[in-house]
Amino acid sequence: MKLKYLGTAAAEGFPAVFCACETCKKARQAGGRNLRSRSQAILDDALLLDFPCDTYAHCLQYGIDLNAVRHLLITHIHKDHLYPTEFLYLQSAYSHPGDDYRLRVYGSVDVGELLGALPPAVGKHLDFVQVEPFAPFAVERYTVTALPARHSSPHPYIYQISDGQKTILYGHDTDLFPEQTWAYLTETGVRFDLVSLDCTEGAYEDLNYHGHMCLGRNVACRDRLRAENLIDADTRIVLNHFSHNGKSALYDDFRPQAEKNGFEVAYDGMEVVL
Ligand SMILES: [Zn+2]
Ligand SMILES: [Zn+2]
Ligand SMILES: [Zn+2]
Image 1: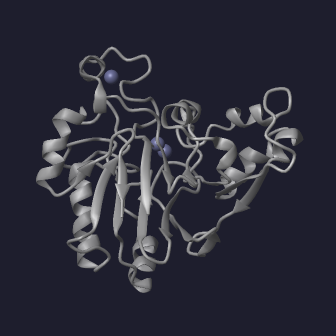
Image 2: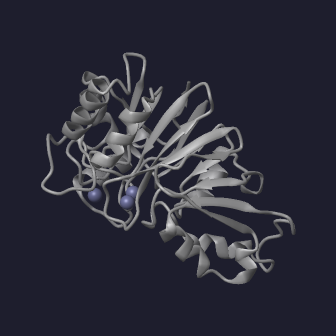
């Protein structure tokens, strides 16, 4: 299994699109891994995870032919994870995807509502599959399970994805998981090879709101995953989805603090091979 991070920022990008704060200035100066586009990943070059407005740029940068990608999992309907406007260019005035081109899009009822509002000439190329929590479904050779997240959209999911050999948890966007998600995970007794965790707020110990995580919550999440035997010493834990508003949020500043706690820090273009 190969998970490639195409974009690793929160909604506004990092540096944020119109921002003049010191962190964003430093990010622009330092460049490299300090520059983050909106959140997206692709599994084994075949299964796309989320569809932000930076999708097109990701395709150009990483040599992805969207016409060859037929499966898209949507975590939730915030615009940095689903940007339906781009689908308008499926219409024949803009693109010639082929009459039989279908992109199968999996997501909650919220996703279906947004896609349902697109013109019929777009809809004929999109096969929407409404996904219910705790109900595993097949996507090609993968078994995928949507799990409720703790986040500020109506029906946010994180995804458990297994190819029969390896299993990952794609945990974006979420706070510490809801109890029903913990209960499912412990009852099914899964063991993850990779856990990708929200770290929107960087090195803070805790936050005064719910919906995202910071380093302190990542540690709490890891400790519980360990206590419930859902991970072991070989599990890789990658922190992802960073905002310039987080503490020590710049990649260069944050990485040593994350590594001290046994975490890896995602960057645009990072590949995790399991
Ligand atoms: Zn997000
Ligand atoms: Zn900023
Ligand atoms: Zn979100």
